[in-house]
Length: 203
Ligand SMILES: Nc1ncnc2c1ncn2[C@@H]1O[C@H](COP(=O)(O)OP(=O)(O)OP(=O)(O)O)[C@@H](O)[C@H]1O
Image (cartoon, rainbow, N blue to C red; front, side, top):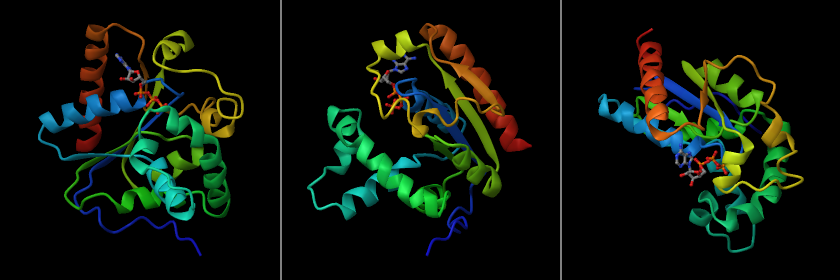
């Protein structure tokens, strides 16, 4: 029923950058910053999420009138449906752990050179991208106090679930990036990250 072979439409692709981090650690924020720096270097980028096709299929299969754009944003709306969607994703992943990784790559333009995956949550996500593409993996660290300032509130059943914790003990990141510093320190780290990513593309 499922196939986890990568889609064939990624002819120009040089690198898949995998972001991981706890809720409100700054995955989307840093993903956009890095994408913008890569674009400045003349590279065509695209931000995708493992959860994007999950959300799209969840909406398609459910009778309720869900708003996909609101589900992709940081609103209360997203929080309300997060748990049920996670369970839905789990059922599909149990049959094919690479299903949503492959699905999200199906939407990538053939002209895209660097894909940034904003939300890797499991070792199987990392394993999928490493198996099929040249990758660069990034774990974002951000203290809980700072995450709270950015909108995090511990929610039992979500923040202690596998979707939020499965990569806590994962060790083999290409880099660990702290997102607690002041803006100028972060800028320095992003420039270093950009150099490392470009080197990976050239390797
Ligand atoms: N270094 C930073 N400086 C200023 N604002 C930041 C910084 N990092 C993140 N933010 C802000 O904090 C909030 C949470 O960040 P973001 O949405 O990127 O987190 P996330 O890890 O993608 O969260 P989620 O897991 O819920 O999707 C956003 O409003 C974002 O703009």
